[in-house]
Image 1: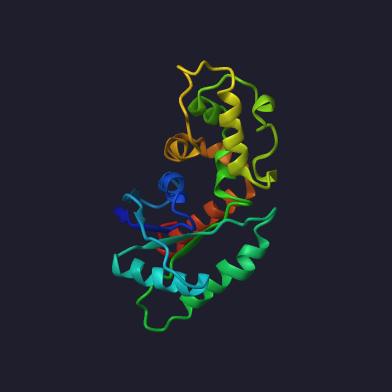
Image 2: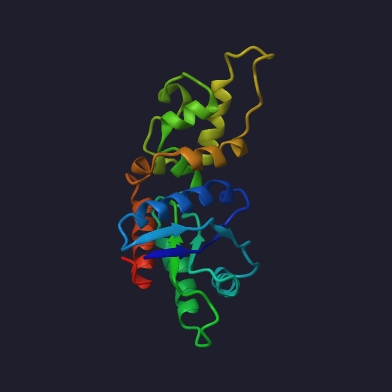
Length: 220
């Protein structure tokens, strides 16, 4: 039997969607192979983040998700720290609790958290070979300053920007395309190896959330 799954996604920042919509789509498709029957994951529906406190905004977004027929609602928040503990304790858990305590059943309660340690850009650093291909450089990880574990960088976005600058130092002005990090989000999200992302505990926690979402729908 075939099932269609509609997924919603709210991201913390306006640029995160370019990377995460592809990651969410591909991750759900990947886990769907473990499910009963055939699963068709429809294109991810983006729900712009509402204003206000995190939990209040999440409730508003969960209502919009319900109205749009979304079956699984993913909520993103960067940890902005070396662990995700504080973000879960102060943002994700209170938000999920507020949504699940709604009694009128007009919110999507099948929820999945996406909490990259430090920032979303740390996940981009998990596939350094791909990142260098998209930047267009043969320089080493060490030369580019991307030789450490992805989630050990305090400011991974700045690390990638620095790598772009280093990659272009030896190019002539005529050949030097002023590449920006904004141009990397979508292609890296489309091509990044999920098996490399699975090395990151924060991604594995997201993947575990996907499995729980499928279980709530009695598909896994």
